[in-house]
Image 1 (spheres, rainbow, N blue to C red):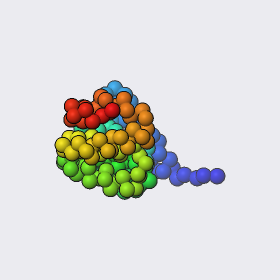
Image 2: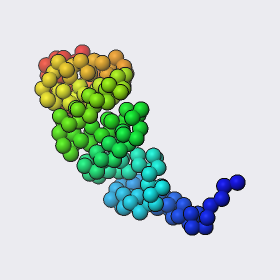
Image 3: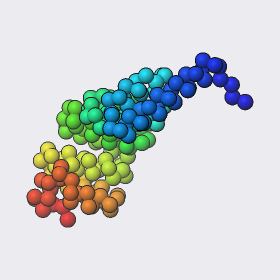
Image 4: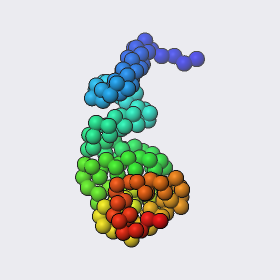
Length: 170
């Protein structure tokens, strides 16, 4: 039998109420209010992986890139086996810092996740934006080899416009 103290049970109730409010605010597009509710969660609840991911997505929606980058970096450090956190970290760093910083994050992540198509695709996007079309083409081709669904995106993603103009995307 699981036993909770009355104070712990009350804290759980309060946390669930706040989490429910945060989801409601998010569904209404009230991102700042949703983030405020998450800030008021107990440390135990705010460190939950699902809560942290929800917060990251809200920070991205709010375009609070420095905070999003910091949280994604923590997630990548604590879950290095999940490539998505490196992609999210690089995405936020691109906006809060530079494409060069984002490229460094993903280059290191590529050594951990050599078969992750989104890492390859984003490396291609960053290379194209830096003007390194050979590297961009190599990364995009590799991404498409790993996930053929990315071929359509390669023909639409604005970051890859330099590749399309140079006729380097098949």
